[in-house]
Image (cartoon, rainbow, N blue to C red; front, side, top):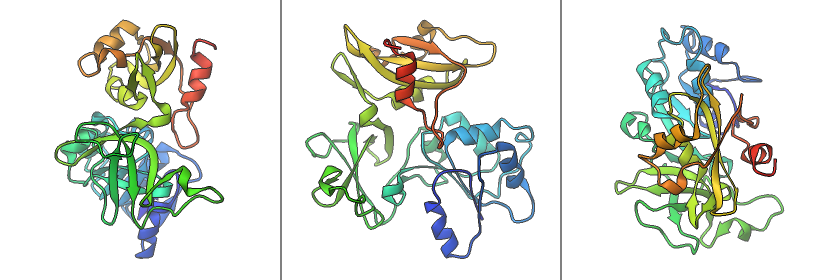
Amino acid sequence: PLFHAGGLLTCAMPLLYHGGRVTTMRRFDPAVILEKLVVPDHPITHLSQIPAMYAAIADQPGFESADLSNLRCCIIAGAIAQPDLIRIWSDHGARMQPQYGGTEMGPCALVLDTSDLEHATRRSVGHPPVHSQVRLVDPSGRDVPAGQDGEIWVRGPSVAVGYWRREKSGYFAPGDWLRTGDVARRDADGYHYFTGRIKEMYKSGGENVYPAEVELILAPHPDIVDIAVVGIPDDRWGEVGMAVIVPAPGKTVTLESLREFGSAQLARYKLPQRLVLVGELQRNVTGKVQRQELAKMYGPTA
């Protein structure tokens, strides 16, 4: 059976088609989910959640002794999971599978094999599944080389044919390529790495900065529980990054320590130049950070 703790049930349809059972919840409850994962009768074999949900379950009493070897596939979607989170679940027997996609894509456009722990902990979202094609293109629609950021274009029989009462030219390129508005880079071996969304990108000193990329590097800071990065106006650079952070209990984080932590992996223009400490981040019903709300609440005009 598949246990789906949130989001759409698109990924459950193939399982239902083959006679499997799907369990859903009205709302997310990490204690209840953990209990169902370890029950001996009718064990859950497939799980689909965002990283924040996996982290919440891992924080529950009893997780340390939990045997999760019945989990054949733990889909990670909606955001990129930190390597430590993937290792924690893998050490308990779960087989983790990072994916990238969306409802319009069927919903999976990129997927990593459950046995590929190495690339999962390197934050890869894998390769296109069967019958799907993926391109990474520059603003002019030309394919970018390996190692360079490009917008993700997707084509295949699983891709939706359009939106109700909207012109396809607004979001489809010639050749029936869906322009996702998301950005990724591909390495020399064909593995894809999600970078962020075009509409969330900001320009600092003329350079493109994707908040999701910055968050992935800064999130492992030992004194951080949660983090979001947004672009805010700046008189000198046009825009700079503002890090909104939930510090660990009893800990504090300074802008200097944060920038030092990220300096080994991030260019200087990508390092945040403003820091705000909060009790929790604004998220929507699917657990995604509400960046626009954070910018309004804590930006220079707040």
